Length: 264
Image 1 (cartoon, rainbow, N blue to C red):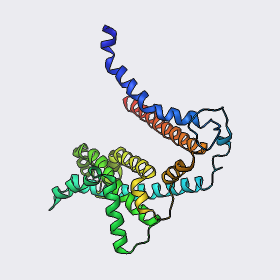
Image 2: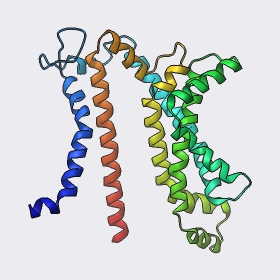
Image 3: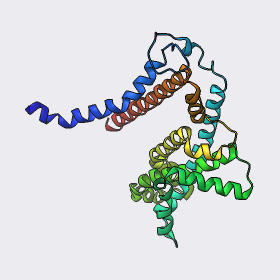
Image 4: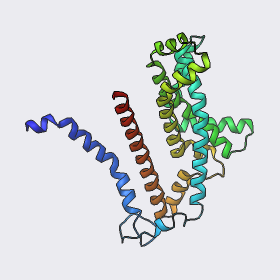
């Protein structure tokens, strides 16, 4: 009992992690299933057919490529705008700064269906045709808040004496920003970019309202679930999960090596 009480926090953390990963394990397991009918909800027999032909379902890879394209452009736009806004809010004082600071958090606090309906109303009143560009604009808009929050937290934790030291060593504003400020803020910018990519790729509600006839991967999954669930969907989900885990592990390994190099 003493050992249990001592490791209670660790045990609770491991149980929580197992609870969170359980759906991913089920998706991974059923990516090797050969269902008897259209629905891949019960295990029948082991098969690698879906892995050998992940694009075997019509429009699956097309919708996946479209989601990746939208997520990439939304990440670039939200990261660029969010980084500039974060620096402005953290470093400068101007009129309405407090109001803007509060408004930045509205997309994070507002229900997605409300934002989706508002954006749809805006696009329809402006006479904009729904499709790729309306999805992209909507994704940049709701990803912006998350990027600003991540980058702003990093910028506010920076030591201003490092930039002052660079200026004392005759570095110009551009050199100081590129060689001192940007490398220090890079982890926050990278975190905001990864978060924006994940949110954009995974979004369904806002996309469904503003997509028109355009079909992204989450919309394809939702539509397929009405008629049947192809095993290839589980294959794509498993591949995305494995790639995300590998990226996180690679980042942790690189950070560990950098820390050991700094210590030595």
